[in-house]
Amino acid sequence: MTQRSLHARHRAPRLALLAAAGLLAVGSATAATLTLNETGSSLLYPLFNLWVPAYTKANPEVQINTASTGSGTGIAQSIEGLVQFGASDAYLSDAQMKKNPEMLNIPVAISSQMVNYNVPGLNNVHLKLSGAVLAGMYDGRVRYWDAPALKQLNPGVALPHHLIVTVHRTDGSGDTFMFSQFLSFTDKTWEQKVGYGTSVNWPAVQGAIGANGNPGMVSAVRSTPYSVAYIGVSFQNQTQKDGLGEAMLQNRAGNFVMINEKTVPAAAAAMVPKTPKDERISMIYAPGAESYPIINYEYVMVKATQPNAATAAQIRKFLSWAVSTEGGNSLVFLKQVNFLPLPASARALTLQQINQIH
Image 1 (tube, rainbow, N blue to C red):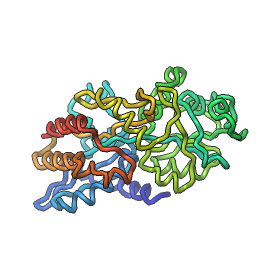
Image 2: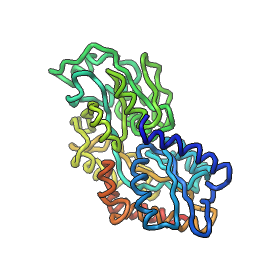
Image 3: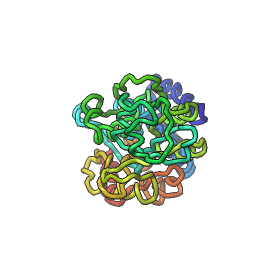
């Protein structure tokens, strides 16, 4: 188990105790400090853990606790008022917003998602994969690494005749939301039978493995030959250190691309101008010859109405710092997790949302 996953496990009981004491709902204010609590996305968690020490050093009047519990938990606990910040790679659905109109979906950065694998002898080769072929791998239509569909995408590569081991998230996950959207947008069978969400009913496939959080996904692929998984880009340094393969994904234009300094910005440039006022938008499978197909806003879910003015003011102050190019959106932080800063137009919308917190 990684240090991060251990850290998250230690945080979870603490959050439960705080919730029982009634502290999470209001932000535990004292004469000297006010405590804010964040939980959710394991993809966003490494960035929060870079932000918090820097921010609280300059603002000692506030304490911020973080926990990596998965986007599903982040969404649920922010809606319930158990935490002030619910980190999520997924925006709330129309049905969720109708039920919880007080919730704000606040983008704080742009991230992306890798597809990694552990195929002995081929981890130094960037195998080409499409959304349709990945859907077939995850629902059992494509069972072996040397299946015709994979051979067609990778001519000249000596693919092994070995059963594919798919790895998926068992916790409610924004990474699952992103990945299952990619499969739904590229494969009609997947769209009709499985669909997308922070949790989906994964098809029963022989040998499939479930894992908790991005650290669990990395660990499962590392320890399982012939496996494939979807992993958030903030763990790219770890996947490279572990020697895992990283796939080239087919984009909407039909080109195979990897995450780099051209492809993620290209996808963002195509989708950011389409961002609505409430900033709930999928940026998966963006148009454009160079666009990487799995990118998204990283969201912080916050209730517009807070229990008291002090908590509201500290939330506004922290989030405004987080999206400032002189603060949390500085490349000093974002480069460490391979995220992009918010473009100016998205930052303006985000600040409008932050100013609604009261």
